[in-house]
Length: 409
Image (cartoon, rainbow, N blue to C red; front, top):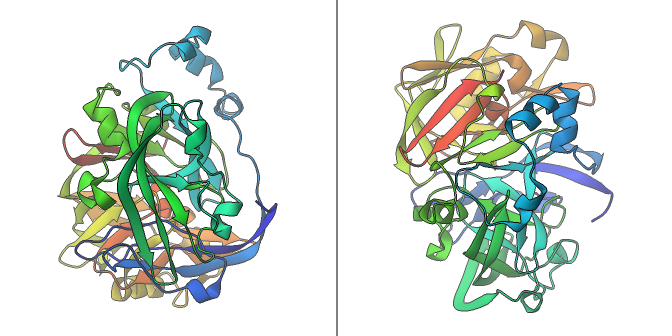
């Protein structure tokens, strides 16, 4: 991949019946518009930043812990056993997957597929359910600068006769499904179904800093009925608890992670507030309202919201977003940086509880300019993306079909 990439387009989910959202980047303004996935329901891209950005390797978990004087405590609680890498994974231990923070806009980690393992970077996306990576059979330019899986190099690969077809408004992704050993954060599943792309036309995925997608939503929205990775972890007792938790760093800091099967209370203050899911498709919840200084500015009478690690910003219906922009003085999305310190919290009222989001989270600063993290979409539901998640530690609980939120420590 080139050392410098000029882009950034961020997406939102257009939530309608039967949607299966997908995460993508584009460097081409001509690709802005609707991207439909299988059922002709798609994503609305919004261009929010454009500059040349050098790719940087993120810091290791050890480096991050050391910088925050947490390394000694971590090693005491989780002593390293050099022999453990040669032993079967034990379900009484959690598994942590470190994530690279790319411009506070995308978070991706490394997995391996096959025997011996072939490594890929993937977005851990709670807004979709399929795992797929490029294959050596893909000749599209989007595949040429990314890692590609070679079935011939894996002794544990098993083919299927199932095709995978994902339709986009400006192109498409097609491929097929197969089974192989997949390792995620130390957890090894010897029979995981995954997709291999054969075509990825256009520039949508060309400049993405990651190779593929690992969906963490429910099986009900999985394309072709493929069993999601986390469902297999649960079904095969590979995790001690049927949940995973997420910490997303902000301000380009490292240390982000997905923790499979456990909760790390050292990353949040107070206690977790639990919210029942309203739908077992996405990680979808019912929201009561959005208020500023006690005044309802959006979601009056209640609405639906999706918590999505694969969406960068906060997307919502145009009327609600417009009200919020007007209230904070950014009708066109731009905000005076000098006013940020005086802006009020925006409060998401959910399940009778208040979840405030300070201006330091919902105002984006880049190259001396400031803009709102709220973007209008054609959807009726809100998408609480990374801008929201930068302020909260979030637990995705499959055992009880709920999410837990607590402010970061």
